[in-house]
Image (tube, helix red, strand yellow):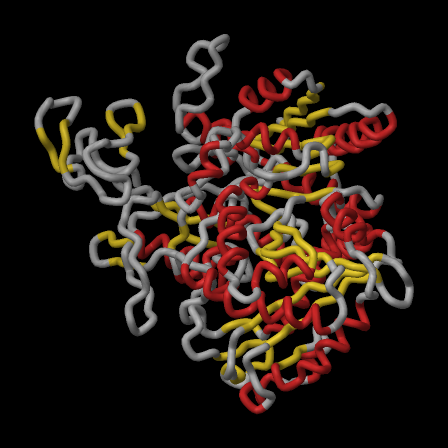
Length: 607
């Protein structure tokens, strides 16, 4: 890991009498790393870093090393400063994460001790600084390999160097301060003593070197906690090729370590074939073994739900669940195993519209980043589930890139069905209906057929959205889980100023809102990533982004004007944006312009 690093003495020289020299150097360093720096951040450096430099000098700790704007591993978050030195009592490396605040006044937010209200702050409320720095400390301890050695010291401290005790009187709650101590300008003497209790007056270069060389991976302690947490959630048994894929991956891990090799595992299968069950089973077992393992997906809803379900009692466990775009700067083979669930959602690159130009210019293909990040990358995918433009994950893409790197690959095809009541009849019928079941060696294999019926799966139609909703609500009231979903061809509005969802999905006189866009609850409606799992989600219509990857007993599907049946096939009209229902277009039968809403000959929307 890299960082803007200098000794406390150099920090003082660069900030006194003027901090402009440090400011320019730090801005250039971050720009090279692809991080844009705004006026507010520069102002915070000018206001806080000279104070820290002077305090370290007055404490006699000019040989301590300082890491400024250090990025937390596998995240975009940065700490203000990390001090590295030698502990005065144990003589072992010692580290202190420092959160610097220029606040002069702050108060509790609505009686909540962990949240504070700071006048003029860009975000209101803000996190209590002790909670903030305590979280940084715990995350670093969980993801930096050097802390497998319990002899090393790591702590955090919040320093409100412009505040008096009375100016932040509502922030002195002992339950919060237990997470990390807090000092004000009024307590500067105590802060200097606190620094001396963590560092001896000896060079800290060795401790800083050790920190920057540290391997980034989940710690053994975190893996132990995660193993217990995930074990409590395991209520499934792997069968058939599920078990084969699971054991192939475990064997690849053992071989990678004993023979210094690298192997990629690719597990493919349709919806309900058990891919995510395998992923969680692997995560739990590898965590129990103390292996460095992470789980990643390209779906925000799926990742957030996994964090809630598999890590519901342990915030550190939730940190094991990442996103595909968090491995741009990952150390090559830094992890033993990286489990890539829903790998069909791999994008061409990890950059987005917020990615700085410098990072864009050196960006690699996302599939290469993920292959390189671990000794054993495990890809689980269904390439027929690609839903967004730019998603490129496929069996061919992954295996081609793995083989181009000279890496062995093992592929397991899960041809069993564990969703839809285990009905392979339904899956085959649906693939044929959607034109996805074509086999070039079997003439007519891809053509739609009448529903053949299967006792293991119920399929029915509704004559109106009112009837569909009534059926869904009745099933839910009877104890079954149920949801309504729709093709994404209606507008998706923000909530109204008074906090109500807009009923955008309209069919005749019937109208209902989409699921919530954001991660914040709107009334009884759950945040987007919990729509499929929380009871309040039944009152909204879900879209593909919130439904994909989840299971419930009954699903009411509304097919809108984005998918129409013409003559003998499905057609995706291009007359307008997918978000706006097309109203008219050319009829392939009559060659005349027709209204899709009224044409009953061949152009009517699918019911």
